[in-house]
Length: 191
Ligand SMILES: Cc1cc2nc3c(=O)[nH]c(=O)nc-3n(C[C@H](O)[C@H](O)[C@H](O)COP(=O)(O)O)c2cc1C
Image (cartoon, rainbow, N blue to C red; front, side, top):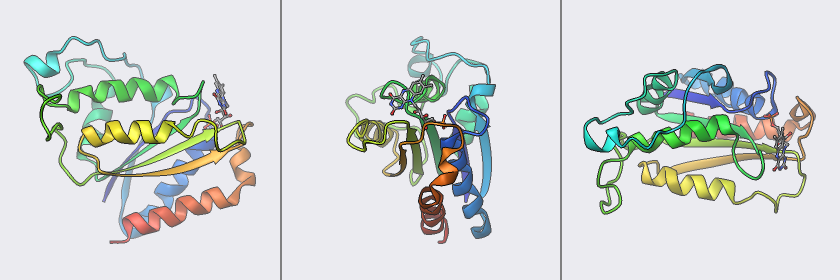
C-alpha cells in the first residue's frame, strides 16, 4: 500500500503532524510505504482558475512544488490530510492543495456521475486538531471536505480529531489520540 501524507501545519512538531506520522508509522509493519510532504516548506500557488485542466490538459498546468504532491496523491492508495483548525477551517497550506485538486475533476464534472480522473478505491484519513475543547465546534469541516473528496472518487474517508490541543506537542499528553491513529492504521492497512 502506498500512502501520501500531507502535513498542513506550519509547526515543525505539530499536533496534527504527530498524529499523522504515528498513523504512517503504524501502517509500515503491514507493508505500507509513505511519502510525506510538509506543505509549509513547499512553494506553490493556489488554483488560478485558468481552466487549462478543463480545456486542454488532464492535469494542472502550474509547474510548481505541488506538481509532485498531486502526482503522489494520484498514485497513492491512501492519503493522509493533516491540518490544524484555523478560523474554523483547514490551514491555508492544506486549502491551497485542496483547491488544486480541481484538476482531478473531468471537464463536464457538474453533469457527470463519474466526475473524477483519479483511479477508484483510494482512501483518505483526515487529521484535524483544534485548540477549542468543545467538540461541537468546527465539526462541520470533515463532512464538508469528505463530500468534495467524494466528487473526486474517494468514497471512503476517516477522521481523527483532536480537540483542546493548544500548545505545540500537547498531543503527547493525549495518548488516546495516538492510539486511535495506530488502531485505524491497523484496520485500513492490514488487508
Ligand atoms: C491562525 C490560527 C487560527 C486558529 N483558529 C482556531 C480555530 O478557529 N478554532 C480552534 O479551536 N483553534 C484554532 N487555533 C488553534 C489551533 O487549531 C490548535 O492549536 C491546533 O492544535 C494546532 O495544530 P498543529 O499543532 O498541528 O499546528 C488557531 C491557531 C492559529 C495559529
